Image 1: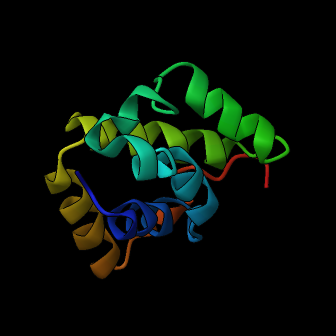
Image 2: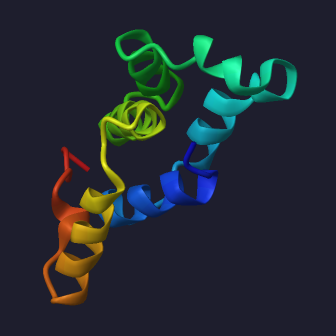
Length: 102
């Protein structure tokens, strides 16, 4: 399971800011449920919508929650994150990928 730091690093690469509150909120049930915490707040349809609503309509919050779930399920390979780092190092701006009506 990726750490919160990994989730936040992906946020920084894509959006230029961290959505720490989303990751804390999504993983809070871990305290009670351990690895089973993903039964809560990790639904690929509802959880990103909840994050969008809780953020006051920030689409980046929706995307951050969706990527959190993909990372946790292994659907978003960590090699993709390395590729984004490489793109950033070479001077491109991957944090502009999701500039949605700022």
